[in-house]
Image (tube, rainbow, N blue to C red; front, side, top):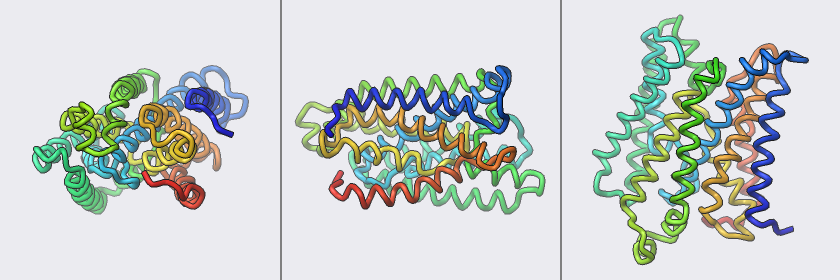
Amino acid sequence: MKLSKATIFTLLLILSIASVALALSIGSVMNADAAIIYQLRLPRVLAAFAVGGLLAMSGSLLQVLTRNPLAEPSVIGVSGGASVGALAVLMLGGAGTIWVAGGAWLGAVIVMLLLWVLVGGYATHPSRLLLAGVMIATGCGAISTLMITFASHVAMPGMIHWLMGDLDSILSLQAVSAILVIWLLVLVVVWRLAPKIHLLQLGTDKAITLGVDVVPLQWGMVFLAALSAAAAVSVAGSIGFVGLLVPHILRGFIIKDHGPDQTFLLPASAFLGGSFLVLSDMVARTIIAPSQLPVGVITALIGVPSFLWILSRFKEWNS
């Protein structure tokens, strides 16, 4: 049965609302009162939705920019830089969401500046950006390992737990407001740029012929992808597979009937990514209640078999 893009988008909106409502109603405490739902579950669920949406949009942007279906937020090293910054704060004894988030942001900005120096005037060559990002990400991974190795026995458990990806540091709606604003701003900008990005996937030369100012658009995509990844990592740590899996799920269900339409795929990823992480986090905090699992473990356990199934199911993908 062929569904229109409007119908699919409406279903995604319904899924988003349903996933949030379900996550609010289910937890380690049965028959939770209003205080538990408002003070504990609601901030975490909203943060999960925003983080998931940002990671998915970042992955979608990078897959178009690099023309690589395996690209995800960590591919340009921004997630790795944010991780190093946050781990440095934890290693030095810093506590609290604000300090860790500040360290993550600083690490992400440093990586963005380093990419600018390395790639500079070569924005029209996505392979150069991809290679530089992979090398930076590898270096950040090595630095993170060294930091954990030399960390004190007090700081080490928190650092390892943070690297797995976790949302249990979200304590209030005020702490969530910033990530929600970033999610909305990125969504609006991506929505406006989506028609040009759709032309960019046809090739640089053809996009220029069709009137697209390619270099500013590509750097805008780099900035949006980096901003999204850094914001997500600063709040929830290193969470994998969302930015890789969600864009492919969307392509699998629309590419046969509608083609790789970025005017649909990019904004739709904000909602499917949010729903995916909300449901994953719900599983993480309830499956062994009252104990909790890092949500990054759940996304990996879901992501690996799901991605393999998608590859076998939709063999016609070529973009």
